[in-house]
Length: 515
Ligand code: GLN
Image 1 (cartoon, protein in one colour):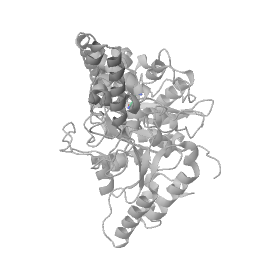
Image 2: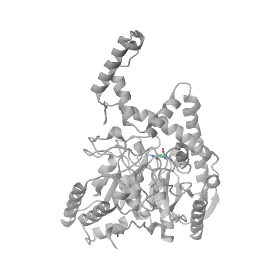
Image 3: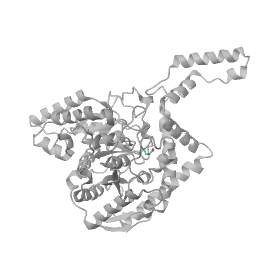
């Protein structure tokens, strides 16, 4: 079996036993990227030289008998919204085209400290706004199971990289489903940790009360391993919580005895594809066969999820994105051209004797801001900034933003009530399997509706993951969504691993040809 087909845990065992070197493992993944990423488009940038140098240093350390970190030389791909010191970090946007952060995100530091080898930066929807990775300013990413289809988003590159065997592990972010939806659509495992579990220092902010960083991998134990590395309190992120990090990788294979599984009737209603429903119900039956009890728990406010999320997230985004003004970061329009245009306009009005129009001309600075932002942001980002600015403006704030916050609280209370009766909630990740590229680009609302099941997790600040639970008749992966109370990632991982020990959906790999 080739190295790139092995799980991260199996590779780590080989590395620890000195059966392979990190340089060999890293080289194997780099070769696979070279062979297949031209077609898949998962990576925006790959730094083979830096990765091989890092791998060689780890091999040296191991050879000398020095202790190696938790990741022991395993390669990791990272979403391009995590700051990497001195390395281009675009967040999928033109406005950050040449942006080189002066520092590393905390999770990047943690991966390096754990001896993870960073392969490169993965493609994403611009500023993580989107569900298909079609909103990237740079390239399309294709689903490795069917290259005419979307991989999901916004962490589409991170998910496709793992699904295509181009990285054993990757790091994504999830604001309304951006780890779990692409994991589901690409047939891999992806976990959104509890709000506060992982430091977001150095994560380019989208919606700060919702954003979380999390792991994607082939299997649940692989996911547990990477979460253990990523998690933990960070004084540089005041929203990270000061709680000890459980040894997820050690406990992941302990089954949950007497598991009480909840299913939400509201999640099996309108819009849910029949094949997805069937696969999810069969997965629930697998849990029953493993001794779990299943009961329905109602989430009466879940029908407001999409409406609530698409008020709160754009409001926060409009505020977070105000910093891209052509002065502080990244792209700036040609200021000389702006000044020349202004002079030409002034002259035109002066010649026409229109003093009022001359008086009303904006300054070079204001025009520079406007032009920089018009040129630097793509259409979806502009749409969100407009939605958010509108909903936050005087007169609408109470009607939209404040109301959305109140509904958000009700959604959280639905979960609190449900988790008094059940340990884990199971359901579909997305309403359908991966759709064709281009299918929803002209219909933002149709795209937004795909977040129906995932965004509740972020609104409530709880933990959730996606694991493969079947395939559609067209051979596309289907994901099972599991949600757990805040800071119960260990329960989530143990519950998910039970399912993977009883099934083999997670072992199926797409055929990329040329093997
Ligand atoms: N699809 C959702 C959106 O477009 C979620 C994105 C995310 O989680 N970053 O906002």
